[in-house]
Image (cartoon, rainbow, N blue to C red; front, side, top):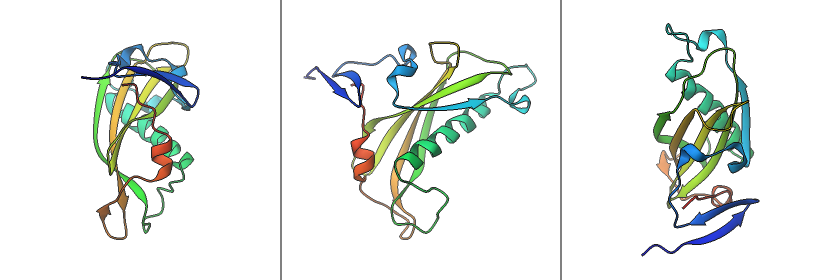
Length: 162
């Protein structure tokens, strides 16, 4: 049986044990927001932002979020970093150029050596998300090329919805 309780962490409320409809997220659900602007080259032949471009937007936000946690992803010879293991992306609504986006990042699942980072793209003027991604990252030692336990910075920034 799943127990349900409310918590407040980093000033954000969530209910333990409840299921979360990610389409109902808004920018206030994130403590980290990265702002990006579309570029002319981001469009495809149909005239909207190409689906692959959103992955670049997500990557830009993810790298800055991880920098805030103390990871320098430019260094290759380190004993504590992360590596991307998988991603799931849901495209909710299309957008066009020019647009300004806000990308929220939030750690929503912890394992022993991996965690999920929820990233959501909002068009600046709109409240509901247009693209939602869940990225599974693994704590990784690049010197030994092996996974390692999660560090305290990842664990302390864990903000589950359920």
